[in-house]
Length: 197
Figure 1 (cartoon, one colour):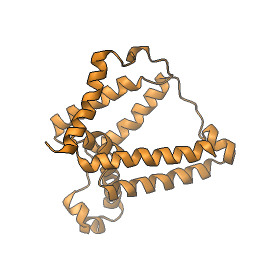
Figure 2: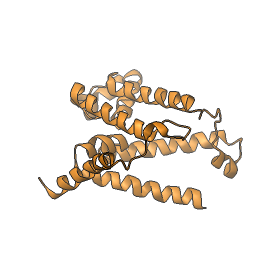
Figure 3: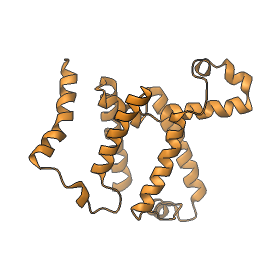
């Protein structure tokens, strides 16, 4: 066992040790408005195990966007799409990974409704303070640009936050652990910029 794998195994054993010592808060006593992060985290772990056992594929989202683009390409420019090497090796079709994205959106809506967090607002309060309540088109443009940049980054990195942060990290993949650390560093930097200025 390499040093990285041993470190990963120790990292994964830490929560088990905390549970055994009783140092972990009771997931059922969570007082926040949303679902308990402990219960959701355990659910994601169970989902990952079931996905690996049933489909022999890890959980991930970024390849679904390439599949969706291929389906659109097949409808709009079928000959050109068929000539692209990626789609020759990975023919675009509706599969469980594409449905996973739709289920994620539906699941988020159910969680927000169940947790009393459906705000029925198109513009978040922090955005409205800076750009005004009537800046919906600007918000949509920035969100779309951010989504495009995230998808491009995920393709360049060989996976997204769910692919690296959940599936890859659980399999003790060194590249996924590096990516996971970078996700947290980038998230902390952006959150610092957004909330401190």
